[in-house]
Length: 367
DNA sequence: AAGACGGGGTG
DNA sequence: CACCCAGTCTT
Figure 1 (cartoon, rainbow, N blue to C red):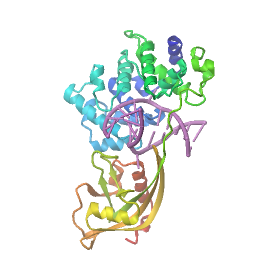
Figure 2 (tube, chains in turn blue, cyan, brown):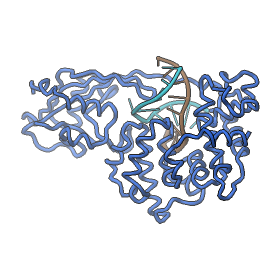
Figure 3 (spheres, rainbow, N blue to C red):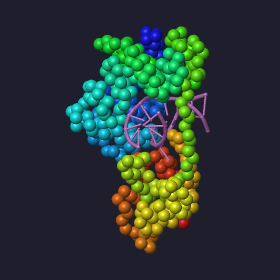
Figure 4 (cartoon, rainbow, N blue to C red):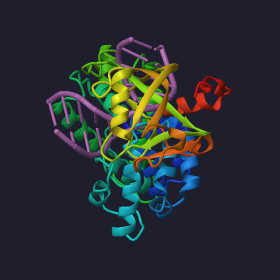
């Protein structure tokens, strides 16, 4: 099984940037970006990231806002913040070097058992097992494991198998060692042993595959409980003053932490325009009047199906129009479209910016 | 053990 | 729309 797989991999491996140069730093970045994200999506982000932050120290010194801006669109934004924290930790505790031991790697924020094993094996050809979406599916089919791979017993079996299958480290032979094997197993899952309609006729190990022999390719891996989608309606407000727009920095500890957003809320804080007016007044002080709806944006993300109504708004502080009003709370600021372009925002936030960018200024004429 | 994570690709 | 993606962290 191992030999055929490795042979197949040497002929069919994709030419990925972290395979050409597999330093721990590069492999680390690639692994974090690839978490819950397809490889093709990662590629442009990876190149840009590496040229902006070529070393651990560059990343540790990175401006958090710029870092988040670079991550924009990849989702699961905590990954970017964990990267930053981990780089700082390496500067503090490991002299700016990537730590050597598995336990020290595992102790870095954002790195779990899979990622630690992937870095140690792929970068350093050390014998540590991995288990992620691809290998979970490949190994489950290979041994005919019908219980859903998320269950505890299945996890134990699969990790054990992943470890048992691992070839011993052979010095200077990455392609036949743990580095080659782990990547080959994942590559097989990505290119051949796909979730739906696996290409068993092209599979190098089909003759040894339990699922293939029993015709269970479509039943394995076992189904995991399906996600409950949630419809959600939110309201965002565009408040302008001259050529600037009112935005805020999202505080620590909540979703979109460290990113910039227009005033936005949904139930329970603000279920409708009236609720939104009072929520905003609370946040800003003074009165906020919400006007016409500029556009309704539909956005599906993770388990949410969001409808976002983007309204024009006007903020009146101390009875004066906002144009003449004084200070705003700390986390808020007025920003031009050009400034917004460099700030990290959610995908929906960016869509709002694009509304402002177009020749629709006339829509604001009532202000 | 279960849910959150607020992005995107694929059939 | 449903499901999946080189998972991790929190509760």
